[in-house]
Image (cartoon, rainbow, N blue to C red):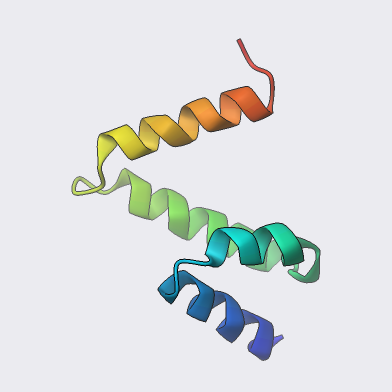
Length: 68
């Protein structure tokens, strides 16, 4: 468990977290996935986070989930 967590944290540093998570999401517990999502959302909600990127995430999810 700790090794997987370290690998993901390293993937964040190496800008490879998207691919790492896409390939290995099923190895994480629900609690670990919750932690990752919450930390990402917290970072996005900070005042210094670029608004266009946050809006980009919104539109990507709308497209993926086929929301109008």
